[in-house]
Image: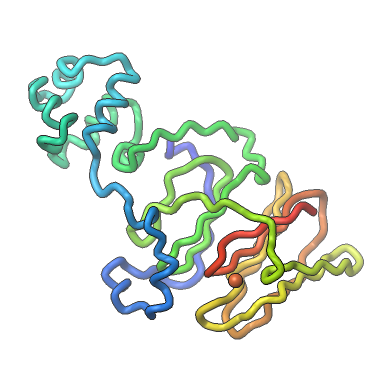
Length: 232
Ligand SMILES: [Fe+2]
């Protein structure tokens, strides 16, 4: 359930509301990935039917719980009508999920109950640049956009990370531009119980120092090319 997901939510800068997207520089648009913007804005009939059937519930049984007719439920499930907003909470309750999950069409089952940070996920808002790390599965949204968990890749030559050990610290450098349009947004070191995250900014240097404790993964994020990861 989404309300059981553990979050470490790190805000950088103020939130930008969706209508302000129009005022963003043109260079932002390539980053507004299609799948991100295609979020469901309301519950779909397919979601209702799948969740109802998963609970082995008939349309009539669901209808009775909500005080509507089974014909009404049938209309929702066949995209001939939508449940009134006042029914969303009772509908989510009857289907055993949260309202956010119902609207997102995704039921979250959190398997990382021990909250091993190395199984965590990074999310970055393409509109305001907000960086979010969750220790488990979650439905995450920012600026009205549902964010997919980022898939980390091995670095290519344009995003190579250099690591220099200095006593109990590591000096990390990414040889990468740091212009306003194209820059490394953060560097992070994740072990099973610790997350170190350093926010970087355009016109600054793509480098930082971090404590070296235990084994884990180094992550760095380019605002144009996405998330990179290296075992440490
Ligand atoms: Fe890049």
